[in-house]
Amino acid sequence: MKLFRDKTFIKGLAYDLAGMATIAIPLVGPFLDLIWAPYAAKKMREMYPGRKGKLASVLVFIEEILPGTDIIPTFTLMYLYTYVWKKEPSKVQIIEVESY
Image (cartoon, rainbow, N blue to C red; front, side):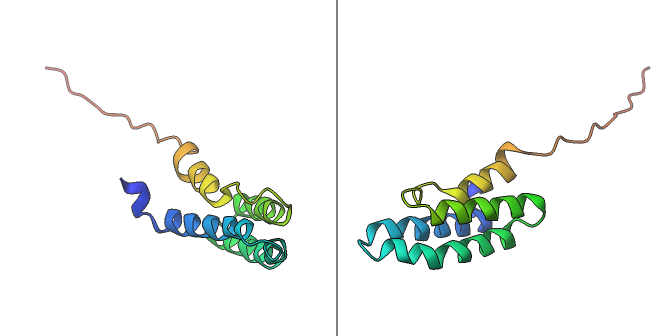
């Protein structure tokens, strides 16, 4: 499947797993989110430039900083939105046919 060969998708999965891993560390996990949230927002902005990237970086920052929301796979959802669900409509191509 092409999806799993895409570097952006693989990096997004790794960042989502790193963000979710902070839940597994008792007592220290919430404090790690204070460090992870700005880093994740920066990486989201680098991976998805433009207006979508700005909005996604704000959302990932809020998602990582709020307790209990670490389980949301923001990077993966952004990838799916950008490359799977929100495909640009293909340009209409006119094909000329000669009749005999």
